[in-house]
Length: 236
Image (cartoon, rainbow, N blue to C red; front, side):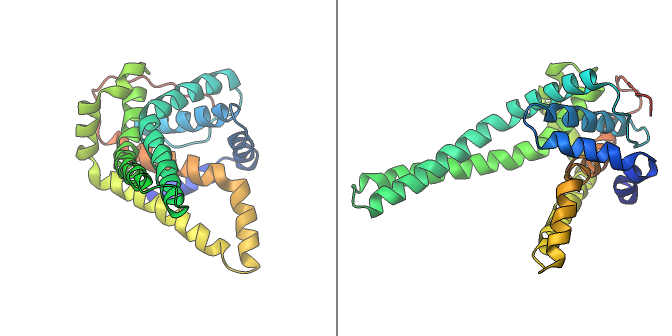
């Protein structure tokens, strides 16, 4: 069972939470440098998957965070490349085909738009499937001694997702509802500007720390206590 309160509150138990979250947020916005924040969030995720306490590690091992973030990025890229390629290609073909048809460039461009729409549909479906598989793939990687191939044992990963599907869905619903609530609050005149400003500085908290706390707890239930795993707990 996911401890929702714990996922939202654990960062604030650390007396240095403002600087730790601010550093993660700054890194998030910078390409390549964001590997640091990915590696940091993965460290928290790994602790959750290994059924340990949620906490904020020290920002003291930048080389390790960068390397971990790189491998996380590589796994993400492998999973999301095909769906993103199909969606982007499909979107370009659909918009381009319709635009050329409306410009009287020829009826054959309707076919191009149709193929583009098909790419969009298939890419979207694959994207949804990937979105469900990826967190458990990362959990499998974390529990499997951080061997790259463990993230691509699709049959095993899929069976584990179904094993904890209830908690898994709850984690997704909570983060989605949180996103929607933030966007609604941002639309409120005047008050929304304050919310948007806070959101800019707390993006690492909402979309990395809270998320890994929620999904890490959900994924942890898919593994038995005697499964192989490696726990590396940095100094707090």
